[in-house]
Length: 312
Ligand code: ATR
Image (cartoon, rainbow, N blue to C red; front, side, top):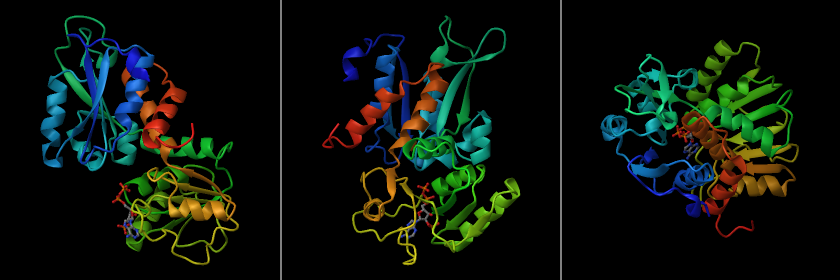
């Protein structure tokens, strides 16, 4: 689709990409390349399988080769934090980096993203600025998918307290929820997350374990559902979802996990994590380019890349 719009590769084409391990499944190249074509930027976005031991060298290589930006995915997000020259507030707050902006120093000493560097000569000095666009994307996606004005007054059950679960929990806790319940296979992780939430958001009612009354919204941030025979992340049989309004699964492949299928059969509104992938990517694109991201084009491209046989 967007391929026809790409400007030809020449000596000033800039590289961007995603580092992951594995990374062959990534839909980010298709999504970003569509946006690049739309804005007629002289960029290419590629996927690189980078062993975690090689992350420092791979980041240094990208700096020296004039990359404009990178996304980082599993397992690099935490490892990258000490490798940044500067961490933006978002990366500091979540303790993880999913977006790197390469910035060049101008003759007056200010810093400019290399994706917006239009002058010659190239900068003498380049720094790596780490951002995290994941947590905002969770909230945006929930609000968009369920057409809510906000999450005010909702009782939320969050399943999972790993990397994604922690970011979701802290973001959700920043909203005026009625209650946030945390459930995790390893209860200690949920407990320490609850303590962190209590310290950062003392007005939020946080509780570890299944809530007494059915929650309005259930969010799955565990990896259960990625594999076809995974058990449900919703282990408690008393929570059969009949009185739950919304169920969100951060997994987007498969498009409908058994949890979402069950939720749909119980009359809940359901959504998968494609919107999170979209919004974290759109924000990263804006940080690199300084342009508004063409969201609908990126969404369509993601949909057709992830679910090629689904109706448009
Ligand atoms: P991510 O960065 O995607 O969040 P992660 O940090 O490895 O990945 O977290 C995976 C989450 O899925 C955790 O909440 C994990 O529970 P534990 O903290 O107990 O490990 C959860 N998870 C993974 N496999 C699970 C299983 N078989 N049953 C229940 N929860 C599981």
